View 1: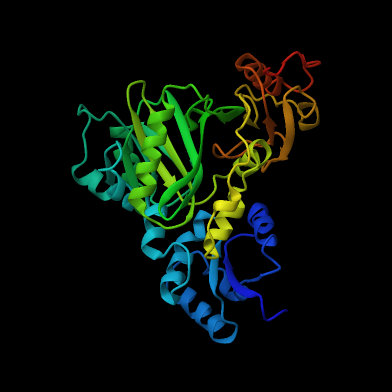
View 2: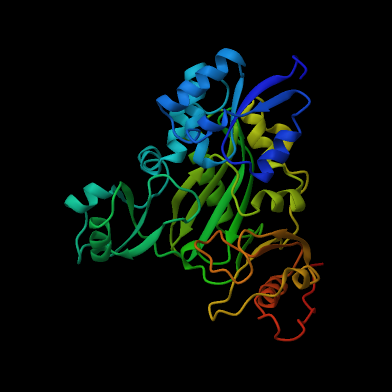
Amino acid sequence: MSESRTRVLVLGRDKEWARRAMDTFSDTHEFVRLPADAERHGALPGLELLRAADELMARRPFAAVVATSESTMLAAGFLRSQYGLPGLDYAQSLLVTNKWRMRGRLSSVVPSPRAWLSGRFLADGPRDGADVTEVVVKPIASSASRDVRRMPVGRARDWLAGQDGLWLVEEAVAVEREFHCDGAFHDGRVNWLVISEYDRPALQTAGTWGTSFLRRDDPLRPRLTELTHRVIEELDAGDGVFHVEFLYDGARLSFGEVGMRPAGAGWGELLRVTTGADIWGAFVATQLGMDSLGFAPLRPAAEISGMLWARPNPDGSLPLPAAQAGRLPGVVLIGEGNRARGADPTNSCDFEYRAYFEGLTPEGADRLRAAVMTPSGAGPVTTGIGTAE
């Protein structure tokens, strides 16, 4: 190894997009991991992690810590605070990984549903017949919609009474539209931002679903932009990337969650293909103490562009095979999935493959989704989808 390279400790799974991003810095940085017997402590701040990191720092000093996913961001922040390293510190990481602390910090800044820790909800939360009729129960720390449940207040009380551990309980929003705002920030202010909309709310997903960039003339765009700026500026986290979710009930936008890492399920690849942005590169760069300015979009995405996550249909039939989906008009790339063909999804981020599309009309996007959902063996798929002028 060249001694001129900066040593960096990596925490978390060997994720493909994180690895690719780190490879772009391999001429100047050496990425190392904790010994195998200590790796299992890499997601948890505490004495065991600190002992292993101290040993590495004593023998092979490192100058930065890279977390590859949200599950190790708090541990990375813990070590940065311990050693005075660049990137989000422990307190900043806590606000974007602990949903209770997130709510406490941001509820006065952006419209937010009411929330309770599960013990407080059971002790003196809303009862049946109160103004809150349904709630969403979720882990204090998790990503995507894993282990998230929406249920009536009474059922939530019964369910929580039989569970171990601490949960977050939120007032349920009557979601009509769900948005995500992704980008990068520099010196605590939004540097660039891309707004997208799921084709239906994440907790209502059954079968193939997707996301597409929000139309430039959508009347909610200015408000979404304003609220995203408020969130990022309130967190005051220096440099990094973000994924902010908002829920719309037909009258008001409400804050959902914020993560300071790239969205999963192929979102970074969609940005790269359609805009030239490298949000994973920005994510790694800012953890190395660099800024994100060189990873911004090079061009606006064509309307309408987005991606579909192919999944078994509600009736149990399978989606169009990936090879056939890749030949549909408008599809520019097929990405690998994380579930075997025919396997039942366990959450909204499980899928057989991703179909990236670009430059479709609204009608064409609808027809593309219908084509991907065509049960295998049902005959040829109509190819008259068309693209926008």
